[in-house]
Length: 151
Image 1: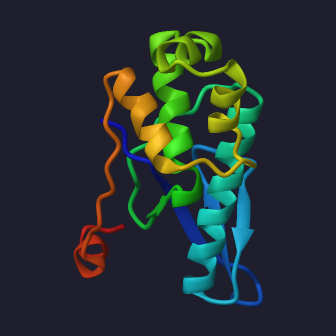
Image 2: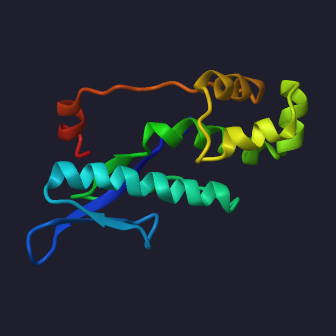
């Protein structure tokens, strides 16, 4: 099972704005006017990092264990399903062409399914994941529970 939650530090800059940094992605930084906006920007930043890794066909690092004071930032939903499919294909060594053959579609359809800039119906990605022996689900946590756990 994969979790798409990455630890990040939220530290104030000289003017008090929270600056977000990801240990797993040292070049990824963002900020916000307050903690709520900084979290929204952090999710967007993380989504952009993931999109770039998919487009450039790079490995996606597993999230590090959070350290004291870090908050867990979820990958935004707009890319989570594509990310799950991308990782499943890489883990199993399945090419776009092979997945297209299994799905009975053209390779360009699979390419679009993985393209962060293309809208893809989640049901199509779920079907592709099932062919790879995976199932995607959404977990909705009680926010107060997540805060108590240090997230």
